[in-house]
Image (cartoon, rainbow, N blue to C red; front, side, top):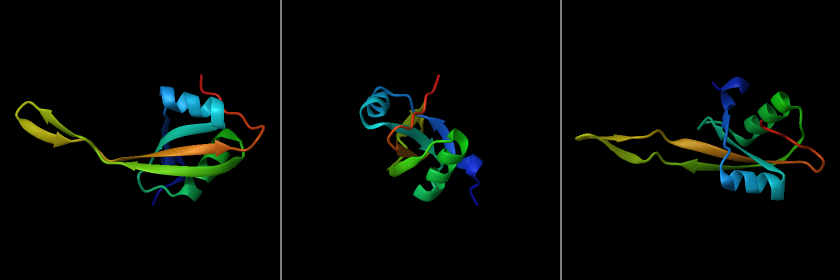
Amino acid sequence: MITQYDVLQKPLLTEKAMAQKENLNAVVFKVHPEATKTQIKEAVEKFFTVKVESVRTLNFDGKTKRFGKNIGRRQDWKKAVVTLKEGEKLEFV
């Protein structure tokens, strides 16, 4: 079972995520792969005291990588784009 503390893993601070933050008032997080949209919304509202308008999620498959002569695979992961309501703001320093 996933607790609210396990849902959000880290914010993604990429160039594309910063553009979404400025243009769409959306924040991007790396989240637990089994987290639902409702759990993500509740976690963001609880930890950052903001109102969430919508949550969009994307699943990514882990890449296959070589480690010397061995072939390995990175973990699968999930990204959430959280759109905040009008007038809400969330800053990462």
